[in-house]
Picture 1 (spheres, rainbow, N blue to C red):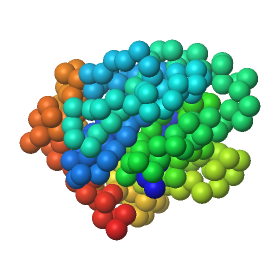
Picture 2: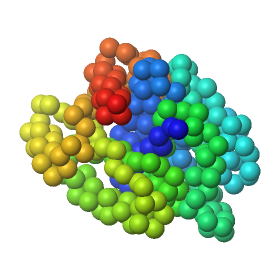
Picture 3: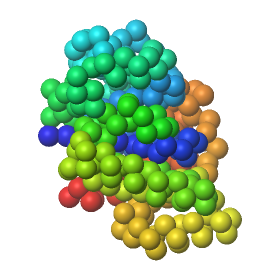
Picture 4: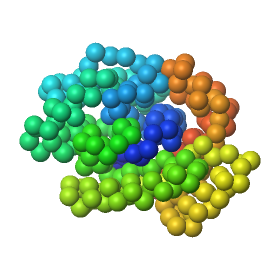
Length: 251
């Protein structure tokens, strides 16, 4: 049965969607069957992959559309996507009136979970009802953290929120890893943040760090993961290295 991993941070601009897209594709390049669920109403993972579709995760959550009917193939072997749209913003109100509203996503994906090696959920930049649904159905979380001090301060608050969800809805939820993003080897600040994170969170911090890289920033504009946009870039190499690190830990 596949592992469900929520990529979560209540702070925007930390590389969450960039990680969701490129880690998913990097694992697919290792011949793991991967599904990425775009659970953000901004739909950045969807547009960043150059995809549009009438049926989205909204229809599966609230209209009773079978989950298999909203899955589309990516432009990469072993990679699949459930797209999002702005309609999902309305779910924040609509889900309030649904019985067991925190478990809707878990129930929806239960029938396909065993078909994939990994299911990643790109969460909105908030701890609202959509993110709670993601945390309730996930086996673990990956937290991207920008290499700056404000991100470090926000991490403790995020982990407190995750702990509350774990106690209330999902006792098996674990922290898969903390990923340092936008790392600039030239700056003292990036190095200090890296050292502090490893000091306090030890082996929860991935060995791989994601550098600041112009190709990572450009690729979504072309509707591509960075592995297709520029496979030789530092950004592509870092996500491939992260995928290999995750596979090593699985073994």
